[in-house]
Image (cartoon, rainbow, N blue to C red):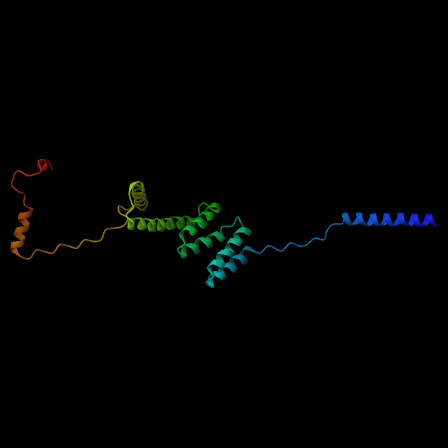
Length: 199
């Protein structure tokens, strides 16, 4: 009787050990990973948010799209254009630079960077002018920038001067005579400028 009890205990322990080892070798059930949303669906959702006037929500959705599809430039294109349209030129430049990382020849990105940079520079120069603080190296750098812009645009002047009003015609003969006398060469008389004759 004692032998049967010992044997039954041994068998129970062996069965228990076998069940534990079977549990450790069993693979956990596979959980299906959620399907990755399509790029077009994510972009459409963000565009709907923008159309509804929810610009910041659209930006957030485009950022999520950019994380899901890091090689695609379209989310960055949408962000750059939206920031530019809103006058947020610094953010527009950052997004446009992300476009150029993915497509170095993108014309829209280069345009946004160039125009946004000019608008930021114009604001800063206007602020400096109001503060009367445009001098020294900043002034030189501004002149160099203006020269570069003139050369790039093929213009001699970036901002044309205001048109001058034509001089009023002289109506009387006396005024005509006075005007011609003023422009006639004067007889050589000693002047205060000793180098006047050399001009």
